[in-house]
Length: 368
Image (cartoon, rainbow, N blue to C red; front, side, top):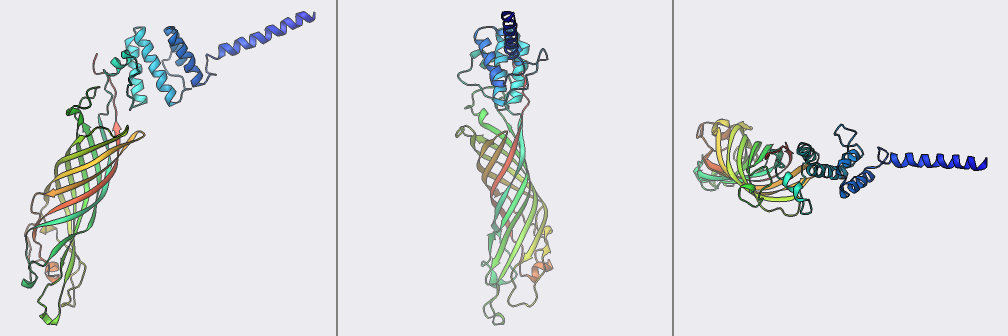
């Protein structure tokens, strides 16, 4: 009787162990354990069994037990499996799912040639990148023709830069193919970039000797600030150099800019020593043309941070035209009281910008 009891207990223990072993192919396993079983099935050529390890029943959904890295490997095993068992539609479906899971996925030299061949048939690059950008600037005035109210002040005035700023939106689109092609070709290195900014351009006018030294036995000097607020549109062509490291891409850019004047103001900063009263800040928008044209030369870099890009550049903007209208040159009361006359000049800028770009991907098969 004791032997019978012992036999029953042994059978029960064995049955429990069998259930545990069979249950290891189910959801109780971790992602790492499941991938180990799937790899073994793949290496032994039992390809038809592999989807049962990775997918939820027959729903064609990946089991929710994988972390990001494990999920990428599971996708690759499924793609290779469907390639080899000649189910191309399923291989395509999982390639698209892979590219949606990891937008920045790239093939390596160690990947099977069949996998590389299929990958190269898909659009794997972003359609465009968009984001925000802003920074600081300094505006330098290039006089074309100068005007004065007092003869003694002629050729003594100077324009000095002030700190300004700009912020706005940017969109980039690569000109090259969205497929896997020679990344060193000229077309693959070109990007078009559009920018829309709100910008403040600021500079000072300083004249240390407004009158003769014997005028009322006093010397006089003036310091004024002029600000322009503008909406600026830039269209730049960008040339990308070879990547510096894995996630850094330096570039240079060149292109035209056009800005529209939103407003201009004149702000006296120092008193004229020979006057007891001084003018208040004045709107001088009529003294400036609405449209200004320029050319921008920039150098910068794009740095990948997770799923977005950080961008930074320094640029020089060369003004192409005289921005003064000549209207009210001697009639604007706020200016005449301040002994300032708007001269003819163009405006150049040095700018430093930083920003963030979000890449928009839309993976699809481009070659049958």
